[in-house]
Amino acid sequence: MKNSFVETVVGAVVVAIAAGFFMFLYNASSVGGASGIKIIAEFENIEGISIGSDIRMAGIKVGSVVEQKLDPKSFQAIVTMSLTNTLKLTDDTTAKITSEGLLGSKFIALEIGGSEEILKDGDSLTHTQSALDIWALINEFMFSDKKNK
Image (cartoon, rainbow, N blue to C red; front, side, top):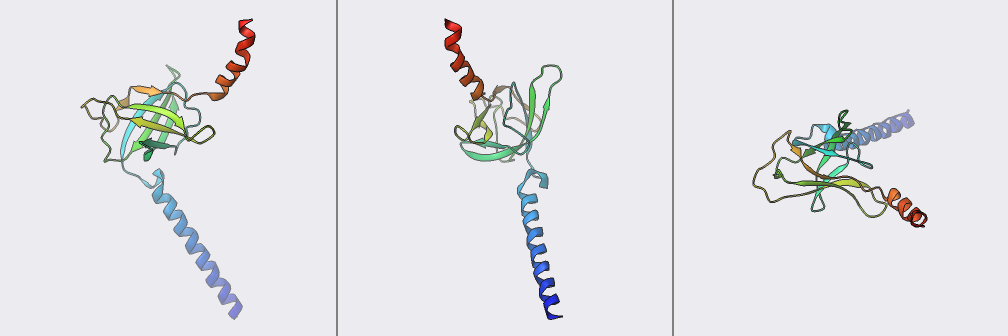
């Protein structure tokens, strides 16, 4: 009887720790109803970016990607970003897909412009730079010698 009670207590502790962990993840992620403004950006190529990818400014996370879809008319990738409410972006802000080093994970870096007009919830960024396809560049470099001969 005593052994059964100890097993029950240990099981309850494990369940409580797991529930606490999942609550932390829920609140820390954008799924937990993170409030913020939604900004839309259109890219030619978003390779390496997915829902939940970081949005950073000056190396600091200021939001995350909450939706991505393909525009059926222009065949451009449309990315919806949820950004912190305290961030005031100008209408000439640039969004660039970059990575944490040569093989690191990709994120969207924002660079503020010089305009005085502030973006509102639902507005779009017009200045974007797509992901760089490093393997296409390597392939082009390797076989460019054969094209010149």
